[in-house]
Length: 305
Image 1 (spheres, rainbow, N blue to C red):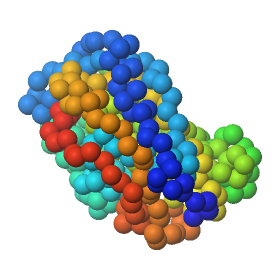
Image 2: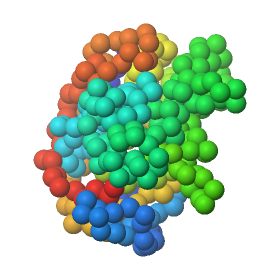
Image 3: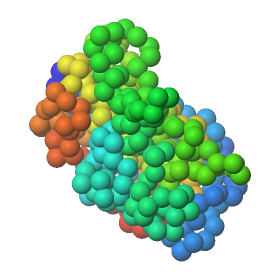
Image 4: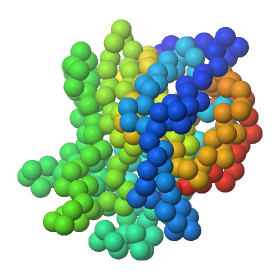
């Protein structure tokens, strides 16, 4: 990898996650949600539109892994999920091959049948379909990431290195259209920009469960930025996270209080130990996490499905 991490002892503890939580609590609007808890009960949310933009210079201050609670046991699953998606994974079984094992609750027989899908299928409007097999007008498919890499190599100065997870004909839900995805993509609008021989990534997110989704999103897109930098022989720069709707479910509030009470610590180091020229060859085991000294894990945080 080009560039070196700043020593762990010189890094500054990052408060952006707790600031995001505070912004939602202080400025968010309470209202109903289309989601339910694990027992099928309706849950309300506190929603903030236009959350504060968060910026992370990976080499300067470490990779954004939560330190207020440990992600030690599942961070590879988050990385595997995104690596699976860029490889076209769109079923629970395919994602499990990449080490991501948490889609079972969203791919039940009931949920899939509601969308006209086979059990375990995320659908043709899912991340994997959009990133790897985006439908074209002539009935073919288009691998967005593969073509963007070609473009960045040929025209690194362009501002059009943009990838979208959204296939509108499969995400619209009205009396004339049946939604063809179990969960409409929440994250994954990626804008890569090469500045000063550094690869930067701005990730726009339409919807973010601050307690459950945000920590995984930070990990997986930081890992992708490192891998893309390696493929393009560039130094990794900034990961910038922009959220349209940041929300906290009201049944998560007890855990919010615990997180806010904990002191933030410096971010850790994430390195690639097995490098590839092909972005689609990367797997979670190609990454190594060091300098990670978080508070203990918080178990049982409520999840909306």
